[in-house]
Length: 152
Image (cartoon, rainbow, N blue to C red; front, side):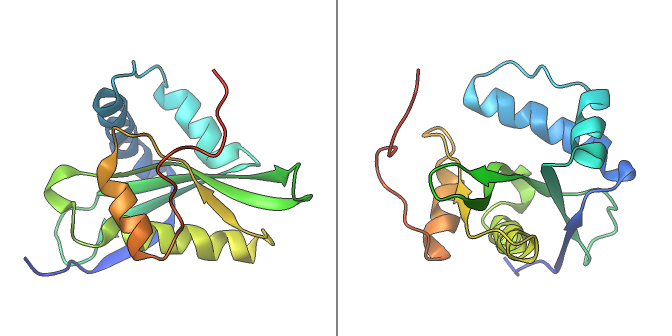
């Protein structure tokens, strides 16, 4: 299967309907109810000062909607005392998985965090989402088998 040509950019209003559908699919994959509404997604993605919603578009396809997304939050890391990016969600639609799109989204998130003056990026993961962990390891990210800390 050839690697698709992908463009990753910040989300725009026309990307949000498909991104919302992908968020619902991600929630289903992790066994959580999808409670985000299109209006809340628009407010977070387009107006929120901390959120950066990146979308991946296949430029070699006639489809114009995004095929994947990464949501990164930027804020102050209270331990390190510096600005830090946290990739909260990463999702690529089923037909396009295992083709480098998730990796392209993570590279774009890392670049965006660096341009925003962040000292680093943390990637959040759940055990149910095994596929993205393979991409993170391929990018040289250190992934522990267990979380470093967790609060319940």
